[in-house]
Amino acid sequence: MQLAVEVKNLTKTFHRKCRQIAALKQIDFQVSRGETVVLMGPNGAGKTTLLKILATLILPNNGSANVFGLNCAKEERQVKKKIGFLSSDDRNCFWRLTGRQNLDFFAGLFGLSGKERRRKIGEFQELFDLSFLDQRVGEYSTGMKKRLSLARCLMHNPDLLLLDEPTKGLDSKTSDRLNHYLKEELSKKNGKTMMVVTHHLPEMEKVAGRVLRLENGRLVS
Image (cartoon, rainbow, N blue to C red; front, side, top):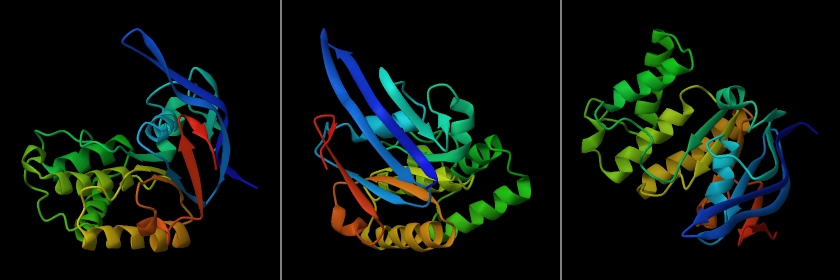
């Protein structure tokens, strides 16, 4: 079995107001290449913290997290080439730039040629109905920012997608279109691996292959 994600004894604590808060407590699991896993659990369960460790944004206190055999804490640059991370907030793009300028900039960071960047932008403009790409991001609504952020994290064709509430703020039509794209285009056709945080399992049931549930920082099922 080829592994996309391997987490062993993963522990993360935060210090807040003179208190130590355990966000993750000795988490162990594996995700196979091409698998789609949904992460569920109440607010504060540790779902977003887990994704941020896999995305190399924060370091664990103990244990290890590997992506395609690369250590997230020690091989940050190589890991980032393999992943596309969508956070649950709207701080994913530069607000003073237009949406088109943002997509062009982030795609350029991953070495895409000008021709390829234009092709990709056109593809996602149609897929996510990005008719507003030439407006400044600071003028966008929450749903518009989410659609732009989805395109941004997909621009470089990542092997692993880490999606934190991808349909939050989207209308039902766009949500259905996104779920269809995740399942048919990315999972079935291209064999991408996905880890998706959601509070709404019914809308992800057709996409998910497995559900992991976190509670109080522990993997319970």
